[in-house]
Image (tube, rainbow, N blue to C red; front, side, top):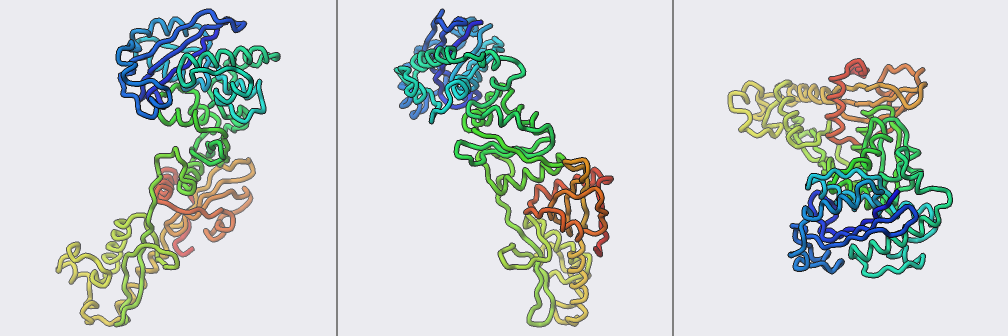
Length: 459
């Protein structure tokens, strides 16, 4: 078995939108003896950002006359093919090299070893496992830092030390197909992955300070988390996961639907750095009621603020206005007394709906009866429960929609007979509603009516 120790310098943090500016490869035999060396600058066909020039010392002028990657692809592939690809934070270097080779017609599929992960196992107890600080701590000279050749020299010396320390054959075990060591981010303990269940739920990626940086849902938590790391995606998100994720936690849910609801609430609550979808703040609107100075009950739309009571709520202003317009038509209310734009109801429609309340030709008592009917309708929007399997065999999962809005979810004993929605409110945990969840639950209820317990409007 031979090892190819690799280091690259690049124009950016992920391969899909960046290029290689320098590459260094050293081939070692099974005992750690260096057999071959290769190093060159590369024209990345990208501008090198100023901060990277400052870090590496590689300028646009330096690479202007350097070979394109396609000119060295055959050589690089020959060095890496049938070798174990070794690097410090290996998935970063591997994703770039594999992508560049693939663009030149070469399909690299090598076993990988990460010297960060190996060092955490074989050289435990150090404060930092960055290449520079670890080399300093163990007495390895690290010269010409942030250049491919200097970093490769240091990684070779580190790997030779790891080979010496590996009395129990941990490196060989890490190369087995059943091991996750090749795929996991460099700083994530394998124990975090090993504890993941094969059940529906949500999973959390944490950074080095413990803060949640990503929340995901899954039908099978273990498979889904594995998919984030086992593919060779060159996109930004995967590279961010590889670089910033230090810990994985999870929460089991009874069903995939519960996981989707939990994910949505957690994204809104935690605002994780690497979640792109659903990160939009929602104002809450609703229909309000009050009595004017002439004794007429009036309806209108207003934004939800602390302490204000709404007859019902909507996540979009247009939804609230549309609902009010429907109430006006269904209960023959005066559009003007409900602050409806007169352009939406012409004079003819206004006369059909309004009995003269806006001109005081209809008494407040008679008009208010219809307003009260409309208000009672809003109070009796559909209530239903979505009941499905639980985490354990003797329980069921339950998601409660209360008067048209998501209320909460939880688990109930299989022996409990569900008769009234108020009964379920004692068992479920309340959650903050949002439009994504509400739309999801009504769509699910329509698609899977056999899992729905519908309650009477009077409940």
